Amino acid sequence: MRSQSEPASAEPGAIARPPLVRELLLVAGLFLVYKFGRQLATGHTVEALHNAHRIWDLERTLHLPSEVDVQSALLHGGTLVHLANTYYATVHFPATLAFLVWLYLKRPAHYVWARRVLALVTAAALVLPFTFPLAPPRMLAATGLVDTARVYGPSVYGPPSSDHFSNQFAAMPSLHFGWALMVAIGLIVATRSRRRWLWLLHPAITLLVIVGTANHYWLDAIVATAMLGVALALIHPPHRTATTAG
Image (cartoon, helix red, strand yellow):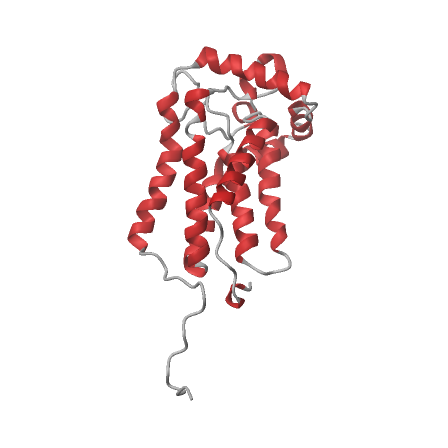
């Protein structure tokens, strides 16, 4: 008979929390790669604009909803479009970071899984600006779309010719949407609350924001979803145990 003082065995599939310093460096590296990696593919303005026209025409051929309709809904009120611009500028990084921190503290196994998936998607996304530079829809005068961030604020981008902190011709894929979708999927997988499906509101709102503010095409989000799907197929989540309720 097992003694009452004998320590209980570890739960199946449980893993130790990864070393904090190492994880801080890995996550910081992920964010830096995202932020600065695309700058290596700058200098393709003509090709990026040409590809933008091709994407716009392809979306019409596929009968996708018009980005113009989403933006028209936002432009019914200055407050709504300002909120959309603010969401685009301020929610993306903090939400993803909070997601990783929570998983690290509460669900270490799921944290390792989510970090690997995000790293793979981000690395794959950095390839496209080299092979398919793409100007965002706000730069296409023929679409009739407004650069809402420039007109209504706040804006995270300066003029493309003098913006040395981002590559504005790297619209595809939309990591804004890809990361938001992973946040929702990660929280749904890692928890058991019946309300956990409400996390899908984050990518849903993000999708409407990136399209309505003319920062991305629908196809940017579709390609990001496909990349995330491949990453999730390659990197499987850990099995949930009874301790993952919440």
